[in-house]
Image (cartoon, rainbow, N blue to C red):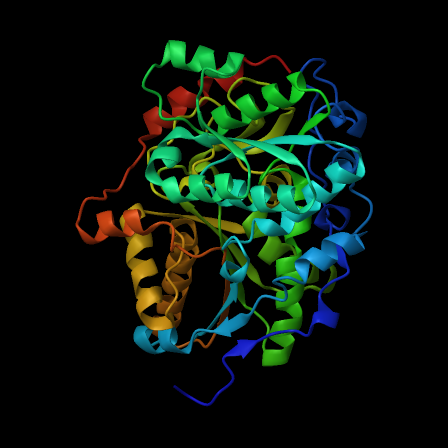
Amino acid sequence: MSTRTKRFILPESEIPTQWYNIAADMPNKPMPPLNPQTREPLRASDLYPIFAKALADQEMNQTDAWIDIPEAVREQYKNYRCTPLVRAYELEKALGTPAHIYFKNESVSPVGSHKLNSAIAQAYFCKQEGITNITTETGAGQWGAALSYAAKAFGLELAVYMVKISYEQKPYRRSIMQTFGAQVTASPSMSTKAGRKILTDHPNYQGSLGTAISEAIELAMSTPNCKYTLGSVLSHVTLHQTIIGLEAEKQMAMAGEYPDIVIGCFGGGSNFGGISFPFMRHNILSGKKTRFIAAEPNSCPKLTRGVFRYDFGDEAGYTPLLPMFTLGHNFAPANIHAGGLRYHGAGVIVSQLLKDKMMEAVDIAQLDSFEAGCLFAQTEGIIPAPESCHAIAAAVDEANKCKESGEQKVILFNLSGHGLIDMASYDKYIAGDLMNYTLTDEQIAENIKELDTMKL
């Protein structure tokens, strides 16, 4: 190992005191979400029955670029932040690339992923409002695990609807949530009207994030003193995640470099926005030319092959109508092991940024993602979550382009979580039992045709 500096860590005093709200600086603001009943532009007060008021206000805030982090949240952050920025020297060497590759290691949080950054904030704001119970959905279980930890920290009761295929594929994530005291239910379930309808229509349905969201919202709406919390997609979630990029900005300065390319895996947008938006503000305000790449699975290609439409964030149509790149809220994703990326749509901020060509998107095949993840594990000593493997694969691709061109670009990606609880998926990859899933243009067109009939 070289004596060159590999890890960059900020002192506790340098942990950010504010989150960054990119919506305030965007040249083109996102189109307004619509109230699902009236089809009129959404107001923050429309969200109060579902979300804590402070979170609803954050969701609709397009004027304040900086939002204060409450001291109680910051104290919880100090348990694991600042997370390391790491120069991936061994990966660079294995690739033979002149590129400098850095990764922000969010896997060091108590629950092993970046999801805790927003879970702590959402639990805090619910507690401050006097709420006693919260509900949520989870795909791969990363968000459910994070919120279970945060709910216990603030004395809240939590009910989690976990996508059924992940409930079966990732039993230890379920165990983690239960260890922290959460109630976990496989979705779709017979405990809600939305779940019963889906199971009646499709008895063997393995679930989706859209389904789990419907069930969690329904339970929140029917339970006294209960609110719903969300792990991605919405703007207030991405706001909380910007602590990742804000730290990385200071750490890149410690390294004496600035990224030419910033990469994050993409499910709903919180991980990608968290690492990207603080750097993107310099493109907007100062004319920087950094490229931003969202890496999604090619079996769920809403950014690369979806359409920009108003659509629901859930399958039953309980959420506001969001202006998003989408595959349709009834989209049934393939049973890939990157469960956190199996979502039909993108957040409104990311969708507008993609529409305005301020960012790019690539789709990654499942086998390519695991190949990149294994290379990363063998060179850097960290087994990445299947979701994070997509960001790694995109970073490897960009590094290989640098090898071909001879350019010495600086690449930064977010390692959103570790894969130590995902070893069953690695077992399947090593045994040759995983496969790629592809969608035809006809399948996508069939799924989104319903959007053209929606009355807005």
